[in-house]
Image (tube, rainbow, N blue to C red; front, side, top):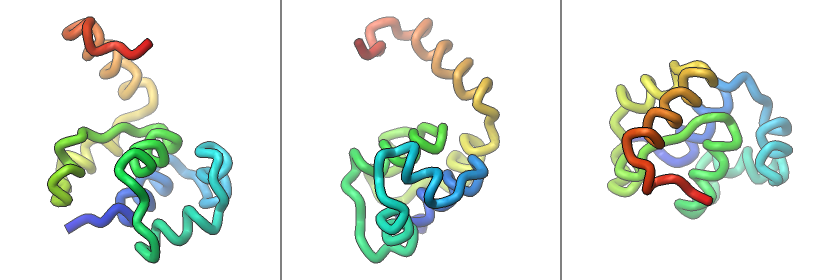
Length: 102
């Protein structure tokens, strides 16, 4: 079972970021990133999404809600390039215009 720490670490590594770089991108301290990755402290659900998004990824709410992320779905998301993730986001907006924020 994936933990919030393993999800954060995986997103950071796949993005090619150091803990300091991810912390800077998310407006957090490097030591806090390290503590989350080691599962010393559990971030809130909102914070987890924020940190993963700061690494350039997005994950489905249903994957975390049940605390049993599907490894293959996560791996497939992390394999996408930033352009592919952007294209997917645009496609979602076109498919469901009411889902746009802002």
